[in-house]
Length: 330
Image (cartoon, rainbow, N blue to C red; front, side, top):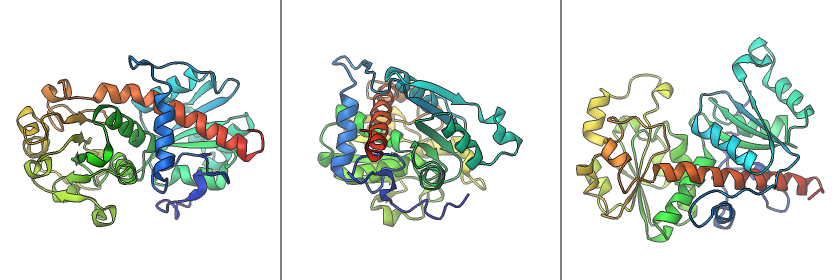
């Protein structure tokens, strides 16, 4: 698999009319395009926050191809597709022909021949979804459900929807992202989206070993001390420690991390009193966040999960329509 273009913002995900035909990254999309995703996602939310069904993908087939473990993302994509009346197929990679030596290309070409309309892909290699969309199945809508350390665009957008609904105008907000930013595809998606949507200030708070090497290019403020980074923050996002992506131990111990960077009620006092708290999950209680905070009144964690269905409904419908328009069928 050649991934040389993995980190290059590309118009690959847009059709000639400028509409989404794939959703690979939040990087490179403009404010109008990101806002359109948020607005469309909002249209699936009833006033009480419940999700409404719309048969926009009736007769279409969505295939979930997850080469890494997932609970929330896989399940919410399946729920989102079913709420759009699509047929949903979850491919068990461990039991697929891929485990018998079949190449990724051949597997995907066979699935495309089975009239797949959308591939939702999670892969450990950065740029995998980009590779599939550009060189393997460009006529199938490809949605990136997380690729290595690179991007997790639907998580980034569901977090933007959570912020917009519960914290308000992006241009007035200080957003602090805490923890393992170096290995986090979620953080990158959030940072790109926050910049485009005009956030007042974006901060990352992490020990030096977990700070991204390219933070200056990301245009964020970096803090090593949690108390300084949380000062006046309106949105506080804790990240999961990505032990599986660390090539060598970068933390002395989980207990030390919790003492310095774990979100506790005491540490939250440094933030804006009305600050909201978020976490992409899965949560490591007592490492990244205290139960009192995760389950407290400021926590938006379960709202994030719910909004994830709406955002994924929006992206599924938009990319399918973008593909149809490209083919002259829309």
